[in-house]
Length: 358
Image (cartoon, rainbow, N blue to C red; front, top):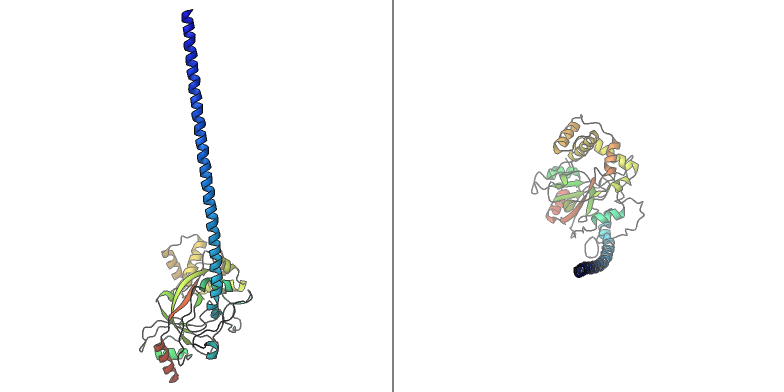
């Protein structure tokens, strides 16, 4: 009986020890769970604080954007001259200090075309346009170059530029080939509704072009001549200009154009067989349509075939679809005046006064 009682005692001790071990394990697990709960609560509080900080930052960012948009709207008066033809009377254009200072309101109807109001020729179509907001968005950061008035700013003929300075009488890019200013790169820009309705309205003012042509970037600076009123008033020297891509005509902006506008762009890219940029655009459109990978070599080969009249078959609608989908885009090239060469301007004035066409 004694041994039996001792065995029972040992069994009770083992059971007690086991229960104690289980209790200690349960207490440790509860402590661990409490610690995990506190950690999660701390993390949640931290996330809430970070979320509050982000809300404040977002609010500040929105306020900054609103302020920037407000500043752009105020600065838009510096760009408004792009939308107004140069007045015939110099006194109308010059302020009391002798600088171009006249400003007009940008508050026009959304449907109004942006650009100088040149009379359209019979059958001429508006090829590209942006609304006022689009113009301000691309050009608000460009400021006019203040051109001091000179004694004369004559408007000259292409024949004059060809005979006196050796410029081409027809080409857009017409460098000077003779005389004191030989090798000076020259752009002779004629504003119309065909890609360039936003050329500068007066010397020193910024402007913009809608163009695929890359020749504008062949030189860092160009001497710019502009015919700012309908022919036969002639071309005037506007200053030394830099040309930079400031954006593209978005697919939404292109899709919002009139159907005649889109068709005109489609026909332009489809039918041009000389200008490299247009040939390359047409080549890429055909390569996509035919499922051919677009590589530099493939584009060059197809461009050559187009020049030779052997290009792949595409339609004007294919071009329009490529522009509407964003596969192809029309760059917006900003024109910024950085200088005005008064010596060059005086040379033009003197020679024009004594010019006799051959």
